[in-house]
Length: 243
Image: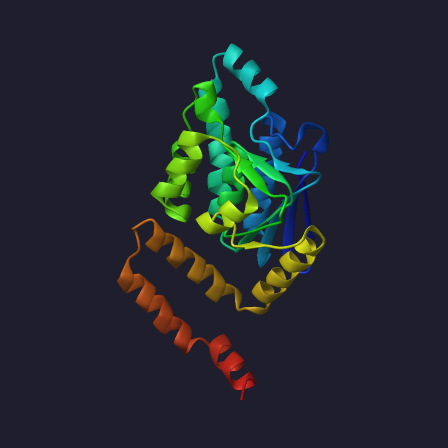
């Protein structure tokens, strides 16, 4: 079951079911959805997503999925997972995913929904959906194409083999790879730098960058936000503090 904690401007979600490789069943998705809603209402400056054990997340719990299929509600199960990843992507503050170990299927999309992804040499991913005759939900496919490009997305989905940390770094799925023992400290350093930035600026920048990535940015609105930030009292205070 996912656990949510708040400390010093950081909201941390930990997937904590290593005995099932942090697979997500219906109850887990409901807990994740509630946690994300709580984070969105909070004043946290950064959200950290991580997992306990050697697997970050192995996607949807296949036993639970088979039960959903048996009850003819597989579309509802897929929608629940897609809604969670979309909600994670839509959080207003920056998000960091700490990937210690593997991510599989929809678990890879949980990581991709985060703004920054840090792995270790043991980080691997695989999406074997096509091997089982499965398609993938639209939000996940969109994120892959937007974040790492069409060619890399085709390589991952159409081949379906396991990709190592070096390949993931080259594809842009990971932004950095650090030693296992340095992962927590690296994530903490990133979080500390984010927390030191001005909150409204960070949230506005994330919103604008996401809009440009999706081709829906209104440049006039972005420029208006820039002009407004120049006039903000907090901007003046921070600039004065540097002199």
